[in-house]
Image (cartoon, rainbow, N blue to C red; front, side, top):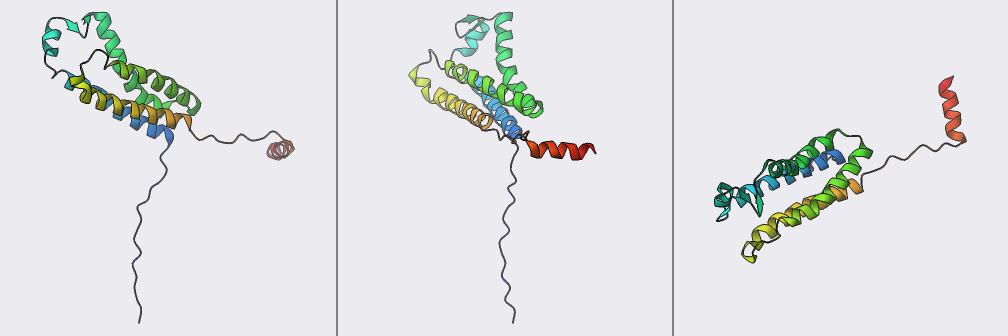
Length: 162
């Protein structure tokens, strides 16, 4: 008599390349970034201020709108940059941009009342966690060991030339 036992099939979990993780994190950051701005419009008085030509304490101007566009365009471009740049430049770019966006994200809560602390705490908290993930992923990017230039490699090069 044969006893059949079924072994469970485990799901395959192949390693995800770092540049893919970075692009996914920047994409998540962008969705959150845009939705936080969208939900901010639902705060009382925000639409009235926009109609009056004021954002926060600033008059709406071409310069202000250009700066706001740049603040959204940079993370949006990081999605593409993370997938296309060579590893060394990609790593450095992600480290610099994510480092700069942490204080920028925290700045969004400046001047807000404690009544809105849950909204800003959650949104900024998640943004900072995503940026920390980006920093960690870029910082720990695996390195390929360099080939030593000793006698063993010299012999290999001579063999290849022949």
